[in-house]
Image (cartoon, rainbow, N blue to C red):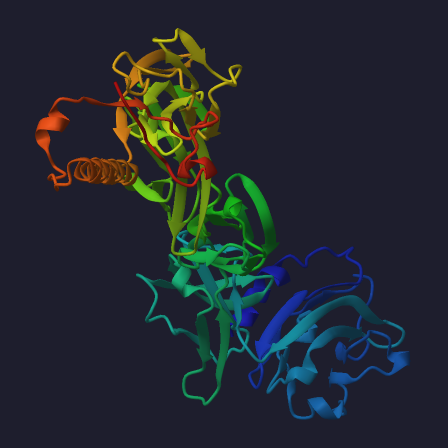
Length: 592
């Protein structure tokens, strides 16, 4: 038998007559359950001892001290053994040849343990050797798996089955290898320490997809029903191969958002969330969520999830867009400019989505509507009409905001069309209206009298009023001395308007008031008719005959003159009429 062959070298070296008590057994030996096992053994004793009545031997289980009554596995002097070994054990070696090899059949887990040999040479020459064989009864074969399996690196797995039963030779098969890429198989028989082991080796290159998958080794004995299997789960280390995050998203300012990240790697990575170069959160796990509360526009941007497990690193980013209504636009400060100048007005704001910018002047649209965060309004050669409030309105789907500025245009005075002199019941009223910025100063000048009328001159009822950039000056001419050479009203009036940018003087035109003019005409015609009637009556009384009142010959010999046209002024004593109460006018007619 093969085990005896293993013992021959040992037996050949036992030739030292001065040898002492000694034994050689395999320190470790194994067998599959329900199979058998041969424990090789050889011993020596002092050469001076002569065995008395032959050489006998005892195998103990568990401990070498007979006084502690260890279970007897085998005994040559008697068949009395421990019940668990009844009919199972046999001495294969020849004790006379110092061969103590033991066979144990149908081993079970309960037979695992230490086995000690005791030599009995008769009389006091009995010795229990302290060396032992440690038997392991296996229910599964062993698979050698490296402490670390790394993806994309060649992996070698070895399945071992003990081959220490002479009549039963194991066969080994690998299970669940169909999914492996290009597996390679090989078998070998190994003999160490007088024990035999059959092995089968599997070589392949694992991938991350193989992580967690099962591989099996099956040991069976031909011509028996004995089959033993062992399964292992592949723990394949690999760098992060995918990092999953939310898709880029949009959130409203002030709301909350949760960003999720999952990393596929083994072992689980260190996951971190970064915003720019700032690390916000980290953990060692397969997933990590980052919650951002009360989101502000400053938190808009690229968020990156990084997974690193020592075998490699990987990252994926998303863009978080924060939507918010336009901020209050930033515009130029209010301006004061000179007429004709050119201006550039800027309006800038922020909003998401980008707002539209609209320029309004005094509520009316000016310029163009801009779909951007900056709008520029060009004002070329500005006129006084450009004076006013300019408002920049920013709008998007989430709200609106606006900012205003005032543009003040300064310009030289301009005489307005309302400027004139008018004949009214009280006399002649002259009005001068001008616009300008700064507001104009108004003076009147009467060239016939060489008189300048302004706020310091009170004889002519001077009145002035300013409303914004418009100034109004007014005088009333009522004195009798205000005459022209032909007896008409003195309406040769000049109006002077001025400010820091210029001065202008114009002659005001006389425009009679229609209502008053009709009254004068009607009154005059009526007065003439009455006078003509009186003259006719007098002639009729003198001549006794009636003369037509309309004798043109008599009237043509006379010339009628308007001696005075007093408008609203005081009457001299003796010249009383209906106009004295100030509510009506009268005409005094004198003949030359």
